Length: 115
Image (cartoon, rainbow, N blue to C red; front, side, top):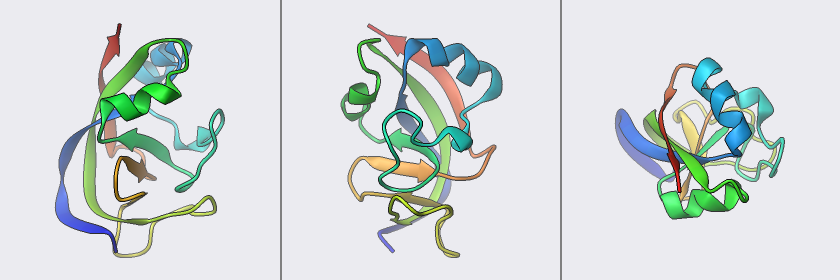
């Protein structure tokens, strides 16, 4: 287990292309599309970052990212084959910048930053 912080809401960041923003705002993040553009190194879920600068590399040239409210409890390490975190965790990650969530309704796109 990497982190056990008790379940609480965190503000995290999600880099994406600008043309995906409307879909995410309308239908929320879709974990079923995990890795559709950049792969899934830490699991097959929705990726968030604790660092907005880190998520910019996933925004390509669109220069935008989403600020999201994410329910996070225990985080464990995941790999490219992880479909769900272990029984005592609700997310996977890399221990630095990445948090991967797997369950609908545990994340909410709050607003877009475009610069």
